[in-house]
Amino acid sequence: MRGTHRLLTTIVALLALQLGSLVAPAYACGCGAMVTNRMDRIGVDRETSAVHWDERTGTERIVMRFTVHGDAEKAAWIMPVPHRAEVELGDPKLFDELDRLTAPEHRDRDYFWPRGGDWPFSWGELDGAGAAPPGRAGGVGVVGRERLGPFDVARLTATDPTALGDWLHRNGFELSDRLEEGLRPYVERKWEYVAVRLAPEKPGEKLYGELDPLRITFANDRPVYPMRLSRLATTPQSLGLYVLAGHRTEPKDAIGGDRPEVLFAGTIDRPTGAVAELTGPGRVFLTAVDQSFPEPARIDGDHELVRAPADTPYREVIWDDRLWTVGDGVPVWLLTVAGTLVLLVAGGFTVARARNARPAAASGGVRSAA
Image (cartoon, rainbow, N blue to C red; front, side, top):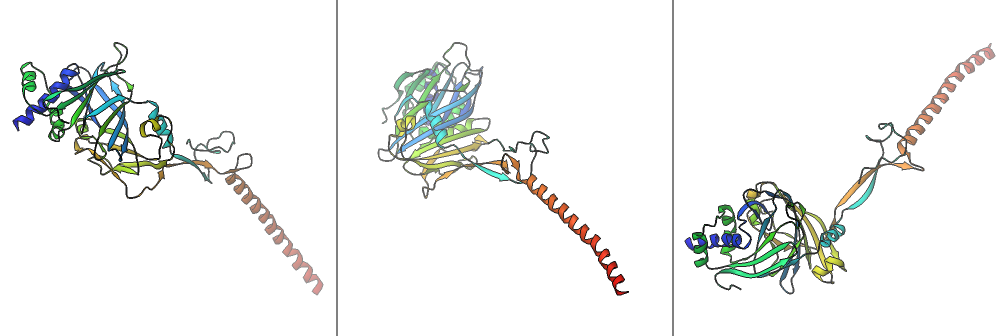
């Protein structure tokens, strides 16, 4: 037990050593922990990731993009991975292409009676629109270090809780108990770690908005999406996940969040652009999933991505309601009401004429009988 504790302490301290002593976790996000100093703060509004699973080669690729806010000028991000990883910059166009491929289908749906905003409730011009807007090396060490754009990436191993941890303790490195505890399951499973130091390009600029995506590639026997560190977050979390695989692939369970919602499922026969660069040119099945974590502390594991029972396609449909019109935008309800009024008036005249005619006919009959 003491060895495990020292190993956890060593990992966190090593991250601090490699990433400029950024060791106080201020915020956690799915698939990793954001780390900054105690005087700064950083929040992750949204995490969007694409996972490509190549079953033939046992290779998993994760491309991640974070949308952040706060007043931090520097921060670090930590991600556990099951095996040795390669890290490179991701293509920012990837998520634009995936958004386009999975965009909801808009369908028109007419309604009969006018609503707020339609004439006569709007008292505006009659235009008939009314449409709603639509391998273990031994010890703890750095196995790789590279500069990727604005990122300083360190790839770490931690399998031996010995001399380095003692040295770091003697030299007064401050550690976080929460991050240490969050890493414990990964240490026990002998995972490795990707640690990324990030900073704005201009001095004094704050970390804000969409950060450049990173692509992490590693071998695996099944696709997973690390989420356990998200339990460190103190505010609700949101995850958008694209899974590209041979078949429809979804999270196995909710792992403490709301039920994952499938927004799109379908085959991409001929991938192009950034999608093809990630997956290759052959056919791939794309599944888009959205999930919320109102209480991050309830997160109890990583997302295990499993094949669905069937490759059932699905696309979200957004109904654009519009007032039913004909011709040059004349509302059908108006024509119906006008036509009904015409028929009522005509019927009234007919009834009135019939009533007026009956007394005259009766009077003439009496005179004839006399």
